[in-house]
Length: 386
Ligand code: PMP
Image 1 (cartoon, protein in one colour):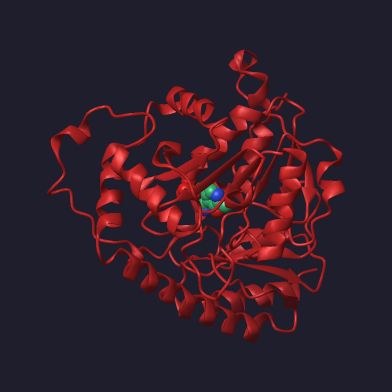
Image 2 (cartoon, rainbow, N blue to C red):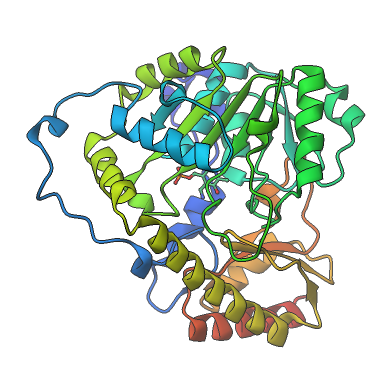
């Protein structure tokens, strides 16, 4: 048993013994120090948040509400998904308290100790953390060059995928890669859990049709979030699921928190109904496109000779591979001491291998000047790292 657990932990569930602090939450706790430049979290730019007003909110919103979520909001989400070529009904939409909740509900639905889950490598660290907490074993697959045999060999219970602007790699699957993943899931009737919080943050043309929309046979869960398009403090997301899975996810949601915050749901609906909403999304993407471009300019200046990366066509992150195989976890305390925070690569790797010079850098939060100065400091640390 973990020696840091209190003595009454003998009463804790066995799951709890594998409960580690989230690396990102730990790092985020230091980023608010004065003068700290943070490339660590996936924090949207504060100046991008819309103005919200509660003035017209009806009183009934403060009452308990339906577990599935507000009907009008579910309808609006289904309409948005139709426009993206995804045929689903409002009845299939379940409002979540942040899309992180969807990860928790899906884990509860599928995972027993030892259950195999197919994940990309790297992938979203907080999904790995939740799946591990329920006892998952991982099999890694490469969504860009799918080896179907390898995907299915260990008989996973479901596949987790972030096809659009992946966290942390930033990459976006093209149409044939999306079809290949859908075909593999259909052939094996492998449930697909598609996580899509970044689809509105698009800077370069790329295919964004949900892979779940391409499925013919396999059960599926698709989820989205209002954290990046509106504001993360609202804690609002949604999932859409095939009819064979939805009732179970709804019951799990009921058991978890009865329903999501109705005030947030009402605020989000006002935004989605605003005639300026799509213009706002375009402006948001333009703002982030500029930040990405200037961040990449600074990366080229300071990391051009010591690292490689792909330009992310959307989302919030650069995934960097240093030319030297440094364990970037060891670089982090030195960086924090120098006033710069980043995410080491290792927590994003499902197979618990040591990352070889990989790190994730968020470009949406720091100003242009901060990005330049932070990257200069970080590059100097890499040069001097022994
Ligand atoms: N999935 C992915 C891939 C994410 O990157 C995040 C947060 N950054 C989430 C889910 C959770 O987002 P939220 O709960 O804010 O909707």
